[in-house]
Amino acid sequence: MKAVALTRYLPIDHPEALLDVELPIPAIGEHDLLVRVAAVSVNPVDTKVRAPKDKVEANPRVLGWDAAGTVAAVGAAVAGFAVGDAVYYAGDITRPGSNAELQAVDARLVAKAPATLRPEQAAALPLTALTAWEGLFDRLGIDPDGADQGKSLLLIGGAGGVGSLVIQLAKRAGLTVIATAGRPESAAWCRELGADLVIGRAQSLVDTLAEQDIRSVDYIYNAADTDGWWDDMVALIRPQGRIVSIVENKGVLNQDVLKTKSASFGWEFMFTRAMYQTDDMAEQGRILERVAALIDAGELKLTLAETLSPISAATLIEAHRKLESGTMIGKLVVHSW
Image: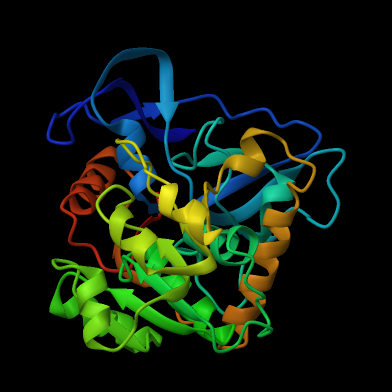
């Protein structure tokens, strides 16, 4: 089968940063599906994994953790899927990724794709929808169906793929959403998705919100920079409030203020359930089922901003380059072989 892979971890401008390769069709385990991949989305995790490092892979490594396609084979212990089903998923970072014609993926991480979407539209959703959903409802403990209506959420990094879904899901849950955006077009995107207030990121969030007579918020979702906004977050979180971040920190996070407020800080990493084979691993499939239902009901807007074709090393290099520019709004998908 065709695949796009790497053997060395190189800058994206290096001609061998990603390579077109031929690989054997993967064998599937009893809990797996074999999926014929039609479209893939490129996420920051792809560029972070591919980032330069002093390491050489003995065998080509396939990246890609967002896909839509059709089921080509079903493992012996799998129920609920059949050959030919249209599916979507983010998968498992510890296994070969979706930048291949065929991919083996644990069926518990998979759901049937939204019926109203083409594969390139569906591929834009899984990783960001799961990250947004888990961060809001599993880590921050917000009720997805409105029991926390009227509470406030500060979203740092509103215009990216994750932020775009956080805004919509939080608004659907009845929250007041304050989003940060670095550029006018990013701010417009956040407002279009339903953010109640959009503020700039190049200034103190504390001072900016004080100008709006906002001194504290119930929840904070950081999708941009944990270190850079730490002081603002601990200053703004309400006593007994909750903070979640998806961005790894490089320094030391001083949590003294959180202690006096009895406030909590936690991480959201979408691959945790798959990496550790947690007892609730199948929750990811159920989340994607619910997201598909919301999409088909018209309750969530697509976050797809751009598509490229075909799936090849050259096209994926272009996609990585666009993502590394830091100017993407929404999601970027590569489709068709």
